Amino acid sequence: MLQLKKEGGLVLETLRASGEFPPAWHSMEELEKTTNNVISLFLEERYCISQKLGGASLLTEVLDRMLRTTDTEFMDDNTLSENEKMNMVQALDRQNSMMQLYPRYVSLLLSLLEKVVTREHPNASILELASGSGGLAVALAEAVQNKHLPVSITASDIVPQFIEEGNRLATEKKLPLHFQLLNAFDLPEFPEGRFDLMVMSQSLHHFTPGQLAIIIAQSAKHTKNAFVGIDGYRSILLAGGVPLMASLQCIPAFALDGLTSARKFYSELELDIIAEIATGKRDHRVTCDWPLSILTVHFDGAIRNKT
Image (cartoon, rainbow, N blue to C red; front, side):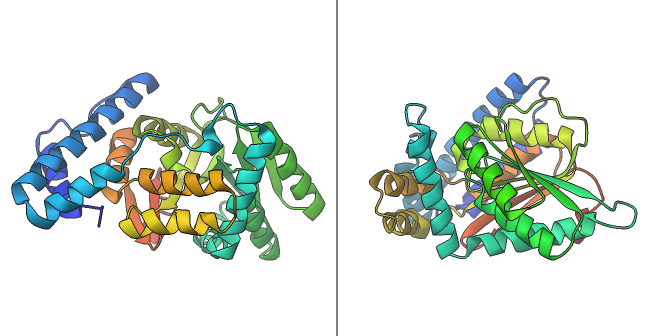
């Protein structure tokens, strides 16, 4: 529920049949505007189809519209102090550990990294965007180290205190991990193909469709193999379950962020459309590994047919 795959699929078929999808773009500004417009059109057309179908389709569509929000999470509030933001991301780390999410993320990424690390390509590098305080990056670095894989990991965020704390942990644990201050929406000019994999977990919904398209397009320039985006699965169950789990941290703002985030999760078809506009092709896939949606965008054939 809330995925509306049948209704959305009909809209996407019509878009592709028009011969004007995916739309062309020539700058990041144009990509952002175009993607936002297409997603808005997609949702409006899906609503029209749901009206025609009536019944459960219309009811689900109306519910989806009621739940959707463009509110900003407290975690993204520029007026929030770095200490307050640190408390929030550390609460998220605790929640992820309690739900055993990091081992699942690590397993997924290791399966890709092990295919990258071959005799022809003995070393691999990975960049995590919007890494927060580094819970996933640390867990992945520990797993890489335990498996003796020649992999270097760079984690990044826009909050300086996250970077300082992350590098302190990496040094303390002697991990193949470095934290760097980066804006995921505006990456610097890395050498082309600098990284083998680019990863973003639990942050896709923090960005508008256009911003997410820019992130994917930038990844295509800086990444050899794939961009992997992991986020919550858009559903009624998570709309209630995420804030409920977040409330266990006894931080009101964090619990409210859980509700806001669950309301902003992208459906699988929305992620499909965003990736196709960003890359101009359909060399990606969106899968559900409950309670997660996983977007994998391939940039060449190195690991494509094996993932």
